Figure 1 (tube, rainbow, N blue to C red):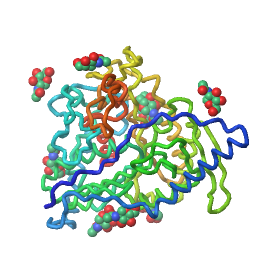
Figure 2 (cartoon, rainbow, N blue to C red):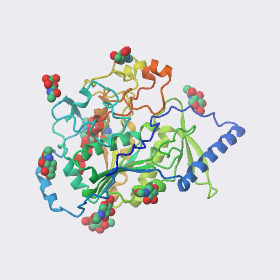
Figure 3 (cartoon, rainbow, N blue to C red):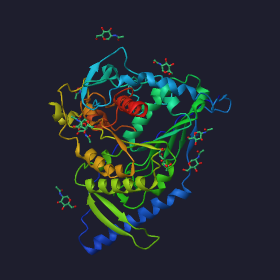
Length: 439
Ligand SMILES: *[C@@H]1O[C@H](CO)[C@@H](O)[C@H](O)[C@H]1NC(C)=O
Ligand SMILES: *[C@@H]1O[C@H](CO)[C@@H](O)[C@H](O)[C@H]1NC(C)=O
Ligand SMILES: *[C@@H]1O[C@H](CO)[C@@H](O)[C@H](O)[C@H]1NC(C)=O
Ligand SMILES: *[C@@H]1O[C@H](CO)[C@@H](O)[C@H](O)[C@H]1NC(C)=O
Ligand SMILES: *[C@@H]1O[C@H](CO)[C@@H](O)[C@H](O)[C@H]1NC(C)=O
Ligand SMILES: *[C@@H]1O[C@H](CO)[C@@H](O)[C@H](O)[C@H]1NC(C)=O
Ligand SMILES: *[C@@H]1O[C@H](CO)[C@@H](O)[C@H](O)[C@H]1NC(C)=O
Ligand SMILES: *[C@@H]1O[C@H](CO)[C@@H](O)[C@H](O)[C@H]1NC(C)=O
Ligand SMILES: *[C@@H]1O[C@H](CO)[C@@H](O)[C@H](O)[C@H]1NC(C)=O
Protein backbone atom coordinates (compact mmCIF):
# COMPACT_ATOMS: atom_id res chain seq x y z
CA UNK A 1 0.00 0.00 0.00
CA UNK A 2 1.29 3.44 -0.86
CA UNK A 3 1.50 6.04 1.84
CA UNK A 4 -1.07 8.79 1.67
CA UNK A 5 0.28 11.48 -0.56
CA UNK A 6 -0.35 15.02 0.52
CA UNK A 7 -3.34 16.04 -1.55
CA UNK A 8 -2.97 18.90 -3.96
CA UNK A 9 -5.98 20.78 -2.89
CA UNK A 10 -7.01 23.64 -5.07
CA UNK A 11 -6.10 26.78 -3.23
CA UNK A 12 -7.63 30.20 -3.35
CA UNK A 13 -11.15 28.91 -3.42
CA UNK A 14 -12.65 32.01 -1.95
CA UNK A 15 -14.40 34.30 -4.30
CA UNK A 16 -12.78 37.55 -5.01
CA UNK A 17 -14.62 40.76 -5.20
CA UNK A 18 -13.67 42.26 -8.49
CA UNK A 19 -13.56 45.86 -9.43
CA UNK A 20 -15.70 46.69 -12.34
CA UNK A 21 -13.58 47.53 -15.34
CA UNK A 22 -13.30 50.97 -16.80
CA UNK A 23 -16.41 51.74 -18.82
CA UNK A 24 -16.00 50.88 -22.44
CA UNK A 25 -16.99 54.20 -23.74
CA UNK A 26 -14.25 55.62 -25.84
CA UNK A 27 -13.03 53.71 -28.82
CA UNK A 28 -9.50 53.80 -27.48
CA UNK A 29 -10.30 52.29 -24.13
CA UNK A 30 -12.50 49.77 -25.88
CA UNK A 31 -9.63 48.64 -28.04
CA UNK A 32 -7.26 48.43 -25.10
CA UNK A 33 -9.70 46.37 -23.09
CA UNK A 34 -10.48 44.19 -26.05
CA UNK A 35 -6.82 43.50 -26.55
CA UNK A 36 -6.35 42.49 -22.92
CA UNK A 37 -9.45 40.38 -23.02
CA UNK A 38 -8.49 38.81 -26.32
CA UNK A 39 -5.05 37.86 -25.16
CA UNK A 40 -6.31 36.43 -21.92
CA UNK A 41 -8.93 34.41 -23.75
CA UNK A 42 -6.44 33.12 -26.27
CA UNK A 43 -4.13 32.25 -23.44
CA UNK A 44 -6.72 30.57 -21.34
CA UNK A 45 -8.44 28.68 -24.10
CA UNK A 46 -5.25 27.41 -25.59
CA UNK A 47 -3.74 26.17 -22.43
CA UNK A 48 -6.01 23.16 -22.41
CA UNK A 49 -3.81 21.02 -24.63
CA UNK A 50 -0.45 21.93 -23.23
CA UNK A 51 -1.41 22.29 -19.59
CA UNK A 52 0.49 19.88 -17.49
CA UNK A 53 -1.85 17.37 -15.95
CA UNK A 54 -1.46 17.21 -12.22
CA UNK A 55 -2.28 13.86 -10.83
CA UNK A 56 -2.06 12.31 -7.46
CA UNK A 57 -3.31 8.83 -6.81
CA UNK A 58 -3.88 7.86 -3.25
CA UNK A 59 -4.39 4.45 -1.80
CA UNK A 60 -3.16 2.66 -4.91
CA UNK A 61 -5.39 -0.30 -5.57
CA UNK A 62 -2.93 -2.58 -7.34
CA UNK A 63 -3.01 -5.12 -4.57
CA UNK A 64 -6.72 -4.98 -3.98
CA UNK A 65 -8.82 -7.97 -4.80
CA UNK A 66 -11.67 -6.18 -6.45
CA UNK A 67 -14.91 -7.94 -6.84
CA UNK A 68 -16.61 -5.86 -9.49
CA UNK A 69 -19.24 -8.18 -10.81
CA UNK A 70 -21.03 -9.17 -7.63
CA UNK A 71 -24.48 -8.78 -6.32
CA UNK A 72 -27.21 -7.54 -8.56
CA UNK A 73 -29.59 -9.52 -6.39
CA UNK A 74 -29.10 -7.11 -3.50
CA UNK A 75 -31.26 -4.61 -5.29
CA UNK A 76 -34.53 -6.28 -4.33
CA UNK A 77 -33.99 -5.51 -0.67
CA UNK A 78 -34.40 -1.79 -1.19
CA UNK A 79 -38.16 -1.79 -1.41
CA UNK A 80 -38.51 -2.14 2.33
CA UNK A 81 -37.50 1.41 3.14
CA UNK A 82 -39.82 3.12 0.70
CA UNK A 83 -42.30 4.09 3.38
CA UNK A 84 -39.69 6.23 5.10
CA UNK A 85 -40.44 9.00 2.71
CA UNK A 86 -43.90 10.01 1.67
CA UNK A 87 -44.08 11.19 -1.90
CA UNK A 88 -45.67 14.55 -1.55
CA UNK A 89 -43.88 15.90 1.47
CA UNK A 90 -41.73 18.97 0.93
CA UNK A 91 -38.25 18.26 2.21
CA UNK A 92 -37.30 21.91 1.79
CA UNK A 93 -39.52 23.27 4.54
CA UNK A 94 -38.79 22.18 8.06
CA UNK A 95 -36.62 22.90 11.04
CA UNK A 96 -33.29 21.95 12.56
CA UNK A 97 -33.52 19.56 15.48
CA UNK A 98 -30.64 19.11 17.90
CA UNK A 99 -29.66 15.45 17.83
CA UNK A 100 -26.30 14.54 19.27
CA UNK A 101 -27.11 10.84 19.03
CA UNK A 102 -27.59 10.31 15.29
CA UNK A 103 -25.37 13.27 14.26
CA UNK A 104 -22.77 13.72 12.93
CA UNK A 105 -22.96 11.06 10.20
CA UNK A 106 -19.15 10.66 10.20
CA UNK A 107 -16.10 12.06 11.91
CA UNK A 108 -14.31 14.97 10.29
CA UNK A 109 -11.10 13.94 12.01
CA UNK A 110 -11.31 10.43 10.62
CA UNK A 111 -12.50 11.05 7.07
CA UNK A 112 -9.52 10.12 4.92
CA UNK A 113 -10.52 12.46 2.11
CA UNK A 114 -11.67 15.62 3.85
CA UNK A 115 -10.30 18.91 2.50
CA UNK A 116 -8.42 21.21 4.88
CA UNK A 117 -10.54 24.24 3.97
CA UNK A 118 -13.63 22.61 5.47
CA UNK A 119 -12.05 20.42 8.18
CA UNK A 120 -13.04 22.81 10.97
CA UNK A 121 -12.42 20.56 13.96
CA UNK A 122 -9.00 19.66 12.62
CA UNK A 123 -8.21 23.37 12.40
CA UNK A 124 -9.19 24.33 15.90
CA UNK A 125 -12.93 24.75 16.02
CA UNK A 126 -13.83 23.71 19.55
CA UNK A 127 -17.60 24.15 19.72
CA UNK A 128 -19.30 21.04 18.39
CA UNK A 129 -23.01 21.84 18.32
CA UNK A 130 -22.83 22.69 14.64
CA UNK A 131 -22.24 18.98 13.92
CA UNK A 132 -25.30 17.84 15.83
CA UNK A 133 -28.22 19.25 13.93
CA UNK A 134 -30.61 17.09 11.96
CA UNK A 135 -32.89 18.53 9.30
CA UNK A 136 -36.49 17.70 10.07
CA UNK A 137 -38.91 18.42 7.19
CA UNK A 138 -42.46 19.30 8.20
CA UNK A 139 -44.65 16.25 7.88
CA UNK A 140 -42.12 13.53 7.06
CA UNK A 141 -38.60 12.28 7.71
CA UNK A 142 -35.74 12.36 5.25
CA UNK A 143 -34.84 8.81 4.22
CA UNK A 144 -32.16 7.43 6.50
CA UNK A 145 -28.79 7.63 4.77
CA UNK A 146 -27.10 4.28 4.26
CA UNK A 147 -23.69 4.40 2.58
CA UNK A 148 -23.75 0.76 1.57
CA UNK A 149 -27.08 1.17 -0.14
CA UNK A 150 -25.86 4.23 -1.99
CA UNK A 151 -22.76 2.40 -3.18
CA UNK A 152 -24.94 -0.46 -4.36
CA UNK A 153 -27.01 2.06 -6.28
CA UNK A 154 -23.82 3.47 -7.78
CA UNK A 155 -22.43 0.08 -8.75
CA UNK A 156 -20.89 0.36 -12.24
CA UNK A 157 -21.97 3.99 -12.33
CA UNK A 158 -20.44 7.43 -12.34
CA UNK A 159 -21.82 10.35 -10.35
CA UNK A 160 -20.33 13.75 -11.17
CA UNK A 161 -20.66 17.02 -9.29
CA UNK A 162 -20.11 19.91 -11.69
CA UNK A 163 -19.65 23.44 -10.44
CA UNK A 164 -17.82 25.71 -8.03
CA UNK A 165 -16.11 25.32 -4.66
CA UNK A 166 -19.45 25.08 -2.86
CA UNK A 167 -20.34 22.10 -5.02
CA UNK A 168 -16.89 20.69 -4.25
CA UNK A 169 -17.81 21.14 -0.59
CA UNK A 170 -20.87 18.94 -1.22
CA UNK A 171 -18.73 16.40 -3.06
CA UNK A 172 -16.28 16.18 -0.13
CA UNK A 173 -19.25 15.71 2.16
CA UNK A 174 -20.61 12.81 0.11
CA UNK A 175 -17.18 11.20 -0.10
CA UNK A 176 -16.85 11.39 3.68
CA UNK A 177 -20.38 10.03 4.07
CA UNK A 178 -19.56 6.90 2.05
CA UNK A 179 -15.86 6.28 2.60
CA UNK A 180 -16.23 5.22 6.23
CA UNK A 181 -18.26 2.25 5.02
CA UNK A 182 -15.14 1.03 3.17
CA UNK A 183 -12.61 0.45 5.95
CA UNK A 184 -10.10 -1.30 3.68
CA UNK A 185 -7.95 1.49 2.25
CA UNK A 186 -7.04 -0.60 -0.78
CA UNK A 187 -10.62 -0.51 -1.94
CA UNK A 188 -10.94 3.24 -2.25
CA UNK A 189 -8.93 6.06 -3.78
CA UNK A 190 -8.99 9.74 -4.59
CA UNK A 191 -7.40 10.85 -7.82
CA UNK A 192 -6.59 14.44 -8.76
CA UNK A 193 -6.49 15.14 -12.47
CA UNK A 194 -6.53 18.86 -13.29
CA UNK A 195 -10.16 20.05 -13.11
CA UNK A 196 -11.38 16.59 -12.20
CA UNK A 197 -11.17 14.94 -8.80
CA UNK A 198 -12.37 11.35 -8.54
CA UNK A 199 -13.34 9.21 -5.65
CA UNK A 200 -13.42 5.52 -6.50
CA UNK A 201 -14.93 2.63 -4.61
CA UNK A 202 -13.30 -0.28 -6.41
CA UNK A 203 -15.40 -3.09 -5.04
CA UNK A 204 -18.44 -1.42 -6.52
CA UNK A 205 -16.77 0.03 -9.60
CA UNK A 206 -18.44 3.24 -8.44
CA UNK A 207 -17.07 6.70 -9.17
CA UNK A 208 -17.99 9.96 -7.45
CA UNK A 209 -16.34 12.88 -9.25
CA UNK A 210 -16.06 16.58 -8.86
CA UNK A 211 -15.42 18.70 -11.93
CA UNK A 212 -14.50 22.37 -11.66
CA UNK A 213 -16.69 24.54 -13.86
CA UNK A 214 -17.86 27.49 -11.77
CA UNK A 215 -19.75 29.32 -14.50
CA UNK A 216 -21.10 26.20 -16.25
CA UNK A 217 -20.12 27.36 -19.72
CA UNK A 218 -16.49 27.83 -20.71
CA UNK A 219 -14.89 30.84 -19.11
CA UNK A 220 -11.58 32.38 -18.17
CA UNK A 221 -12.09 31.02 -14.64
CA UNK A 222 -11.85 27.38 -15.62
CA UNK A 223 -8.47 26.77 -14.06
CA UNK A 224 -9.26 24.95 -10.81
CA UNK A 225 -6.47 26.75 -8.98
CA UNK A 226 -5.71 30.01 -10.73
CA UNK A 227 -9.00 31.74 -11.35
CA UNK A 228 -8.59 35.17 -9.87
CA UNK A 229 -8.92 37.15 -13.02
CA UNK A 230 -9.39 40.84 -13.54
CA UNK A 231 -12.33 40.35 -15.87
CA UNK A 232 -14.74 37.50 -15.81
CA UNK A 233 -15.49 36.32 -19.31
CA UNK A 234 -17.88 33.57 -20.26
CA UNK A 235 -18.33 32.08 -23.69
CA UNK A 236 -22.02 32.09 -24.47
CA UNK A 237 -21.90 29.29 -26.98
CA UNK A 238 -19.14 27.08 -25.66
CA UNK A 239 -19.72 24.26 -23.19
CA UNK A 240 -18.38 21.21 -25.02
CA UNK A 241 -14.96 21.22 -23.36
CA UNK A 242 -16.72 20.77 -20.01
CA UNK A 243 -19.55 18.63 -21.29
CA UNK A 244 -17.16 16.08 -22.73
CA UNK A 245 -16.14 15.32 -19.14
CA UNK A 246 -19.67 14.62 -17.89
CA UNK A 247 -21.28 13.37 -21.08
CA UNK A 248 -21.08 9.70 -20.05
CA UNK A 249 -22.11 10.19 -16.42
CA UNK A 250 -25.09 8.38 -14.95
CA UNK A 251 -25.87 11.09 -12.43
CA UNK A 252 -24.88 14.76 -12.65
CA UNK A 253 -25.26 17.35 -9.90
CA UNK A 254 -24.74 20.89 -11.20
CA UNK A 255 -24.54 24.05 -9.16
CA UNK A 256 -23.79 27.67 -9.85
CA UNK A 257 -24.67 30.62 -7.68
CA UNK A 258 -22.00 32.57 -5.81
CA UNK A 259 -19.97 33.41 -8.88
CA UNK A 260 -22.90 35.32 -10.35
CA UNK A 261 -23.46 37.37 -7.23
CA UNK A 262 -22.39 40.95 -7.38
CA UNK A 263 -19.88 41.95 -4.74
CA UNK A 264 -19.73 45.53 -5.88
CA UNK A 265 -20.65 46.73 -9.30
CA UNK A 266 -19.04 44.20 -11.55
CA UNK A 267 -20.46 42.97 -14.79
CA UNK A 268 -19.91 39.85 -16.83
CA UNK A 269 -18.18 39.89 -20.19
CA UNK A 270 -19.75 37.57 -22.68
CA UNK A 271 -17.98 36.35 -25.74
CA UNK A 272 -19.82 34.98 -28.73
CA UNK A 273 -18.25 33.17 -31.64
CA UNK A 274 -14.54 32.52 -31.68
CA UNK A 275 -11.26 33.98 -32.76
CA UNK A 276 -10.53 30.94 -34.87
CA UNK A 277 -13.67 31.48 -36.89
CA UNK A 278 -13.20 35.23 -37.02
CA UNK A 279 -16.73 35.90 -35.77
CA UNK A 280 -15.92 36.84 -32.19
CA UNK A 281 -18.06 39.45 -30.51
CA UNK A 282 -17.81 40.76 -27.00
CA UNK A 283 -20.69 41.92 -24.89
CA UNK A 284 -21.00 43.14 -21.33
CA UNK A 285 -24.04 42.22 -19.26
CA UNK A 286 -25.33 42.27 -15.71
CA UNK A 287 -24.15 39.24 -13.74
CA UNK A 288 -27.67 37.86 -13.47
CA UNK A 289 -28.10 38.03 -17.23
CA UNK A 290 -24.83 36.15 -17.58
CA UNK A 291 -26.31 33.45 -15.36
CA UNK A 292 -29.26 33.11 -17.72
CA UNK A 293 -26.97 32.94 -20.74
CA UNK A 294 -25.08 30.07 -19.11
CA UNK A 295 -28.32 28.33 -18.09
CA UNK A 296 -29.66 28.64 -21.61
CA UNK A 297 -26.56 27.01 -23.07
CA UNK A 298 -26.56 24.25 -20.46
CA UNK A 299 -30.26 23.56 -21.03
CA UNK A 300 -29.75 23.42 -24.77
CA UNK A 301 -26.85 21.00 -24.36
CA UNK A 302 -28.82 18.75 -22.05
CA UNK A 303 -31.76 18.72 -24.42
CA UNK A 304 -29.60 17.66 -27.33
CA UNK A 305 -27.31 15.21 -25.59
CA UNK A 306 -28.85 13.62 -22.54
CA UNK A 307 -30.19 10.10 -22.78
CA UNK A 308 -33.11 10.41 -20.42
CA UNK A 309 -33.15 6.66 -19.88
CA UNK A 310 -29.61 6.71 -18.58
CA UNK A 311 -28.77 9.97 -16.88
CA UNK A 312 -30.34 11.63 -13.87
CA UNK A 313 -29.73 15.33 -13.52
CA UNK A 314 -29.82 17.49 -10.41
CA UNK A 315 -29.26 21.16 -9.83
CA UNK A 316 -28.12 22.06 -6.33
CA UNK A 317 -29.92 25.12 -5.04
CA UNK A 318 -28.27 28.36 -4.02
CA UNK A 319 -26.05 28.07 -0.97
CA UNK A 320 -26.36 31.20 1.15
CA UNK A 321 -23.37 32.99 2.67
CA UNK A 322 -23.49 34.54 6.13
CA UNK A 323 -21.30 37.58 5.74
CA UNK A 324 -23.97 40.15 6.65
CA UNK A 325 -24.47 39.74 10.38
CA UNK A 326 -27.10 42.49 10.51
CA UNK A 327 -29.45 39.92 8.94
CA UNK A 328 -29.70 38.26 12.34
CA UNK A 329 -29.18 41.27 14.56
CA UNK A 330 -25.40 41.22 14.68
CA UNK A 331 -22.87 43.72 13.43
CA UNK A 332 -21.89 43.35 9.80
CA UNK A 333 -18.22 43.81 10.55
CA UNK A 334 -18.17 40.53 12.51
CA UNK A 335 -19.59 38.48 9.64
CA UNK A 336 -20.20 34.93 10.94
CA UNK A 337 -17.42 34.96 13.54
CA UNK A 338 -18.12 33.03 16.73
CA UNK A 339 -21.62 32.00 15.65
CA UNK A 340 -22.38 28.71 17.39
CA UNK A 341 -26.10 28.31 16.88
CA UNK A 342 -28.51 28.42 13.95
CA UNK A 343 -31.10 31.11 13.42
CA UNK A 344 -34.25 29.75 15.03
CA UNK A 345 -36.85 32.02 13.48
CA UNK A 346 -39.24 29.79 11.52
CA UNK A 347 -39.44 30.61 7.84
CA UNK A 348 -36.32 32.77 7.96
CA UNK A 349 -35.06 33.82 4.57
CA UNK A 350 -32.06 36.13 4.46
CA UNK A 351 -32.72 39.28 2.44
CA UNK A 352 -29.22 38.85 1.01
CA UNK A 353 -29.97 35.39 -0.35
CA UNK A 354 -31.23 35.47 -3.90
CA UNK A 355 -34.02 32.91 -4.11
CA UNK A 356 -34.93 34.05 -7.60
CA UNK A 357 -31.88 32.50 -9.22
CA UNK A 358 -33.05 29.00 -8.41
CA UNK A 359 -36.48 29.86 -9.74
CA UNK A 360 -34.81 31.03 -12.95
CA UNK A 361 -32.88 27.79 -13.21
CA UNK A 362 -36.08 25.85 -12.63
CA UNK A 363 -37.89 27.63 -15.42
CA UNK A 364 -35.06 27.04 -17.89
CA UNK A 365 -34.96 23.36 -17.04
CA UNK A 366 -38.76 23.13 -17.27
CA UNK A 367 -38.41 23.52 -21.03
CA UNK A 368 -36.76 20.08 -21.07
CA UNK A 369 -39.80 18.33 -19.63
CA UNK A 370 -41.42 18.03 -23.04
CA UNK A 371 -38.45 15.92 -24.08
CA UNK A 372 -38.92 13.77 -21.00
CA UNK A 373 -35.80 15.16 -19.34
CA UNK A 374 -36.34 16.09 -15.73
CA UNK A 375 -33.83 18.19 -13.83
CA UNK A 376 -34.43 17.79 -10.12
CA UNK A 377 -33.67 20.88 -8.04
CA UNK A 378 -32.12 20.16 -4.64
CA UNK A 379 -33.83 22.98 -2.84
CA UNK A 380 -31.49 23.45 0.11
CA UNK A 381 -31.47 27.23 0.28
CA UNK A 382 -33.79 27.95 3.16
CA UNK A 383 -32.47 25.18 5.38
CA UNK A 384 -28.95 26.49 4.82
CA UNK A 385 -30.03 30.06 5.41
CA UNK A 386 -30.72 29.19 9.07
CA UNK A 387 -27.20 27.91 9.59
CA UNK A 388 -25.09 30.97 10.35
CA UNK A 389 -23.07 28.68 12.64
CA UNK A 390 -22.10 26.26 9.89
CA UNK A 391 -19.16 28.00 8.24
CA UNK A 392 -15.42 27.49 8.69
CA UNK A 393 -14.89 31.09 9.86
CA UNK A 394 -11.18 31.09 10.76
CA UNK A 395 -10.99 27.33 11.41
CA UNK A 396 -9.51 26.11 8.16
CA UNK A 397 -6.16 25.87 6.50
CA UNK A 398 -5.02 29.22 5.19
CA UNK A 399 -3.27 28.72 1.88
CA UNK A 400 -1.60 32.11 2.00
CA UNK A 401 0.11 33.22 5.23
CA UNK A 402 -1.97 35.74 7.11
CA UNK A 403 -0.81 39.31 7.41
CA UNK A 404 -0.60 41.17 10.71
CA UNK A 405 -3.64 43.20 9.76
CA UNK A 406 -5.61 40.05 9.08
CA UNK A 407 -4.62 38.44 12.35
CA UNK A 408 -5.69 41.58 14.15
CA UNK A 409 -9.04 41.44 12.37
CA UNK A 410 -10.21 37.83 11.98
CA UNK A 411 -13.43 38.86 10.25
CA UNK A 412 -11.36 40.08 7.31
CA UNK A 413 -10.41 36.56 6.36
CA UNK A 414 -13.25 34.56 7.92
CA UNK A 415 -14.89 32.17 5.48
CA UNK A 416 -18.66 32.50 5.81
CA UNK A 417 -19.40 30.97 2.41
CA UNK A 418 -18.20 27.39 2.54
CA UNK A 419 -19.38 24.88 5.14
CA UNK A 420 -17.67 22.94 7.89
CA UNK A 421 -17.78 19.16 7.56
CA UNK A 422 -19.49 17.29 9.03
CA UNK A 423 -22.25 19.82 8.63
CA UNK A 424 -24.85 21.39 6.42
CA UNK A 425 -23.85 19.83 3.05
CA UNK A 426 -24.43 16.39 4.58
CA UNK A 427 -28.12 17.27 4.49
CA UNK A 428 -27.89 18.35 0.86
CA UNK A 429 -26.56 14.88 0.19
CA UNK A 430 -29.37 13.33 2.18
CA UNK A 431 -31.69 15.05 -0.30
CA UNK A 432 -29.66 13.65 -3.18
CA UNK A 433 -29.74 10.20 -1.60
CA UNK A 434 -33.48 10.44 -1.06
CA UNK A 435 -34.13 11.34 -4.69
CA UNK A 436 -31.78 8.67 -6.02
CA UNK A 437 -33.26 5.94 -3.88
CA UNK A 438 -36.91 6.77 -3.60
CA UNK A 439 -38.13 9.46 -5.96
C1 LIG B 1 -21.46 50.78 -12.02
O1 LIG B 1 -20.81 50.64 -13.28
C2 LIG B 1 -21.43 51.36 -14.32
C3 LIG B 1 -20.75 50.99 -15.64
O2 LIG B 1 -19.54 50.38 -15.48
C4 LIG B 1 -21.34 52.86 -14.02
O3 LIG B 1 -21.99 53.59 -15.04
C5 LIG B 1 -22.04 53.14 -12.69
O4 LIG B 1 -21.88 54.47 -12.33
C6 LIG B 1 -21.46 52.25 -11.60
N1 LIG B 1 -22.24 52.42 -10.39
C7 LIG B 1 -21.72 52.51 -9.19
C8 LIG B 1 -22.68 52.65 -8.06
O5 LIG B 1 -20.51 52.50 -9.00
C1 LIG C 1 -43.37 22.34 -2.07
O1 LIG C 1 -42.87 21.59 -3.17
C2 LIG C 1 -43.45 21.95 -4.38
C3 LIG C 1 -42.97 20.98 -5.42
O2 LIG C 1 -41.68 20.54 -5.16
C4 LIG C 1 -43.10 23.39 -4.71
O3 LIG C 1 -43.67 23.76 -5.94
C5 LIG C 1 -43.62 24.29 -3.62
O4 LIG C 1 -43.17 25.60 -3.85
C6 LIG C 1 -43.13 23.82 -2.28
N1 LIG C 1 -43.81 24.59 -1.26
C7 LIG C 1 -43.13 25.30 -0.39
C8 LIG C 1 -43.93 26.02 0.64
O5 LIG C 1 -41.92 25.38 -0.39
C1 LIG D 1 -26.27 15.13 24.16
O1 LIG D 1 -26.76 16.34 24.67
C2 LIG D 1 -27.38 16.23 25.92
C3 LIG D 1 -28.03 17.55 26.26
O2 LIG D 1 -27.22 18.61 25.87
C4 LIG D 1 -26.34 15.80 26.96
O3 LIG D 1 -26.93 15.65 28.22
C5 LIG D 1 -25.74 14.46 26.51
O4 LIG D 1 -24.69 14.09 27.39
C6 LIG D 1 -25.23 14.55 25.10
N1 LIG D 1 -24.88 13.22 24.64
C7 LIG D 1 -23.79 12.97 23.96
C8 LIG D 1 -23.61 11.56 23.50
O5 LIG D 1 -22.95 13.82 23.70
C1 LIG E 1 -27.42 -0.37 5.30
O1 LIG E 1 -27.77 -1.19 4.24
C2 LIG E 1 -27.15 -2.46 4.28
C3 LIG E 1 -27.43 -3.14 2.95
O2 LIG E 1 -28.77 -3.08 2.63
C4 LIG E 1 -27.64 -3.23 5.49
O3 LIG E 1 -27.04 -4.48 5.56
C5 LIG E 1 -27.31 -2.42 6.74
O4 LIG E 1 -27.87 -3.04 7.88
C6 LIG E 1 -27.83 -1.01 6.62
N1 LIG E 1 -27.32 -0.22 7.72
C7 LIG E 1 -28.08 0.46 8.53
C8 LIG E 1 -27.40 1.20 9.62
O5 LIG E 1 -29.27 0.49 8.40
C1 LIG F 1 -17.53 0.41 -14.39
O1 LIG F 1 -18.18 1.67 -14.30
C2 LIG F 1 -18.17 2.42 -15.52
C3 LIG F 1 -18.85 3.75 -15.23
O2 LIG F 1 -18.10 4.52 -14.36
C4 LIG F 1 -18.87 1.66 -16.62
O3 LIG F 1 -18.78 2.39 -17.82
C5 LIG F 1 -18.24 0.29 -16.79
O4 LIG F 1 -18.98 -0.44 -17.72
C6 LIG F 1 -18.23 -0.44 -15.45
N1 LIG F 1 -17.54 -1.71 -15.59
C7 LIG F 1 -18.18 -2.87 -15.52
C8 LIG F 1 -17.32 -4.10 -15.60
O5 LIG F 1 -19.39 -2.95 -15.42
C1 LIG G 1 -6.90 12.93 -16.87
O1 LIG G 1 -7.80 13.67 -17.64
C2 LIG G 1 -7.56 13.64 -19.03
C3 LIG G 1 -8.56 14.51 -19.75
O2 LIG G 1 -9.02 15.55 -18.97
C4 LIG G 1 -7.68 12.23 -19.55
O3 LIG G 1 -7.36 12.20 -20.92
C5 LIG G 1 -6.72 11.34 -18.79
O4 LIG G 1 -6.92 10.00 -19.20
C6 LIG G 1 -6.96 11.46 -17.30
N1 LIG G 1 -5.96 10.67 -16.60
C7 LIG G 1 -6.30 9.68 -15.79
C8 LIG G 1 -5.18 8.89 -15.23
O5 LIG G 1 -7.45 9.44 -15.49
C1 LIG H 1 -36.12 4.94 -23.28
O1 LIG H 1 -37.02 4.05 -22.67
C2 LIG H 1 -38.28 3.99 -23.33
C3 LIG H 1 -39.23 3.13 -22.49
O2 LIG H 1 -38.54 2.14 -21.81
C4 LIG H 1 -38.08 3.43 -24.73
O3 LIG H 1 -39.32 3.38 -25.42
C5 LIG H 1 -37.13 4.35 -25.50
O4 LIG H 1 -36.83 3.82 -26.76
C6 LIG H 1 -35.83 4.54 -24.73
N1 LIG H 1 -35.06 5.58 -25.38
C7 LIG H 1 -33.77 5.45 -25.66
C8 LIG H 1 -33.10 6.61 -26.32
O5 LIG H 1 -33.14 4.43 -25.41
C1 LIG I 1 -14.82 35.81 19.06
O1 LIG I 1 -14.29 35.04 20.13
C2 LIG I 1 -12.97 35.42 20.49
C3 LIG I 1 -12.47 34.42 21.51
O2 LIG I 1 -13.41 34.20 22.51
C4 LIG I 1 -13.01 36.85 21.03
O3 LIG I 1 -11.71 37.26 21.39
C5 LIG I 1 -13.55 37.78 19.95
O4 LIG I 1 -13.71 39.06 20.45
C6 LIG I 1 -14.89 37.27 19.44
N1 LIG I 1 -15.25 38.08 18.26
C7 LIG I 1 -16.48 38.44 18.02
C8 LIG I 1 -16.69 39.26 16.79
O5 LIG I 1 -17.43 38.11 18.71
C1 LIG J 1 -37.27 26.30 -2.29
O1 LIG J 1 -37.78 26.13 -1.00
C2 LIG J 1 -38.16 27.35 -0.40
C3 LIG J 1 -38.53 27.05 1.03
O2 LIG J 1 -39.31 25.93 1.14
C4 LIG J 1 -39.28 27.97 -1.22
O3 LIG J 1 -39.65 29.18 -0.64
C5 LIG J 1 -38.79 28.21 -2.62
O4 LIG J 1 -39.84 28.68 -3.44
C6 LIG J 1 -38.28 26.92 -3.23
N1 LIG J 1 -37.66 27.23 -4.50
C7 LIG J 1 -37.81 26.50 -5.60
C8 LIG J 1 -37.12 26.96 -6.84
O5 LIG J 1 -38.49 25.49 -5.61
